Length: 286
Ligand code: FES
Image (cartoon, rainbow, N blue to C red; front, top):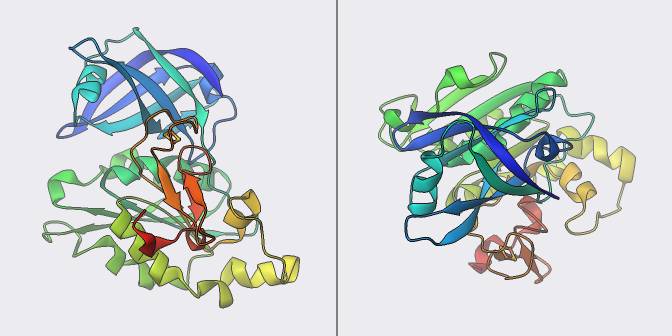
C-alpha cells in the first residue's frame, strides 16, 4: 500500500453522470491486480475531506497510467469530476484482495451490473493478455446506461441485458448466466448485492460438476482452502467483488463488514473486496 499524488491525465463523461478518469501514478500501478482498489481523498465544497474507494478499472503498467470509473452521486464525486488535467489527487493503494484465476482456466465468464463494470473491467484485460477467452455479461436499467463496447478489448464477447428491453436481452443479467455456465471454467462478478446473491445461488453446486473444480480434485483432493485465502478464491467457480460502503478502507472502522458462512465478520476493505461466493453467508443480511 502506497500513498501517491496521482496526476489527472484525462477525464471524460462516458455515460450520463458517469466518468472515466485516467491518472498517472507509477507507484500505485506497480503490482496492482484486478479486483483491487484505490482510496481517493476527495474534497467537497463545504471544506470536508473524505476518501472514497474506486476499483482499478484499467491499469497500464508500462506507462504508469490507470483509470477509474464512477458515477457522480454526491459532493465527493462532484468534486472529483471537476479536477483539472495535471492536478494531483491524493490516493492510497493498491488496496484489497484481488481476483484469483486458476492457471488452467481458459474460459472466463465475467458478470457486471451497472457500475460493477469497474470491478471486473481490468480482469478482462488480464485474461485477454493471458490468451484466455472472455464472455462479459452486462446488465443495466436501460440502453442509455449500457457501458460502451468500444471501451472493451475487441476479443471480449459482450452480451447486454436491460431491465426495460431497450437493448439486448429484456430482463436481468442473471437470466443470461445459465447459458454460459457449462462453457465457463470460472466466473467473476461485481454489482449490486441482489445480483451477486442470485449468481451465488446459480453457482452453488457447480463445484461438484465441471471445469476447474473437476481439475481441482486432481490437485487438492479433499483439502479445503482456508477462508479468505487466495487458494479458496482460485478454487471457487464464482468469485464476487462486493460493493459495500466504506469508511476507513484500511480495516479499522468495521463499516464494511459482511458475514462469512463460518459466522465471522469479513471486512470488505481488508478480507475482500473479492471473495469466493461460497464464503459469504448471503442470507444473513449483514
Ligand atoms: S471501511 Fe473501515 S473496516 Fe472496512
